[in-house]
Amino acid sequence: MNTMYTQFRTRIGFLASHSGSNMQSIIDACKSGRLQADPVVVISNNGNSGALDRAYSEGIPAFYISSKNYPDAEVEDKAIRDVLINHQVNLIVLAGFMKKIGPVTLDEFRGRILNIHPALLPKHGGKGMYGKFVHEQVLASGDKQTGVTVHLVTGDYDRGPILAQKIVPVLEGDTVESLANRVLEVEHQIYTETIADIISGAIQLPQS
Image (cartoon, rainbow, N blue to C red; front, side, top):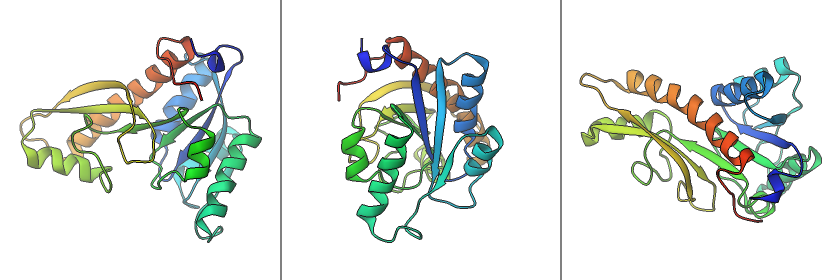
């Protein structure tokens, strides 16, 4: 069992760019006791994101860090890393974060950064494949099923080790919107379940 997650309570840091609905589902699970973890900080690269509004409502420290207030990419990367370190984060959860994780943050938290993808990787993944673009490609492919994947983040888009997957059927007459809504419901379930399995040791993350 990974000692990092057994010696003290898990402290979750979120990186999000838009509404933060996956983030909210995890926060709610922490508040209810379904997750033995504490959401301790939220970082967004979108100053108008719903994720920041959710953080303020929940009383969670929140930071806006983007290329607009940190024009130098390396300085921006280090700012993200430093916020996470200062809040003693030991598990990073990406919740619709529309920016590639920089090498400084990745090196500091390697093996402790989770992402969720709205398809069954390795299918329908890679650069530019997020949100509606994934569902459009699934429908165009004629696939009879899609799903959700939780994986570790590496330096390559959607190529990190897969931790969990769930299948979602593609129904006759599905639109991008109907499929996206059904997949999102599963995202909310599997993300919380995967984090719970990490905390319990049922899923072991690599030693950093």
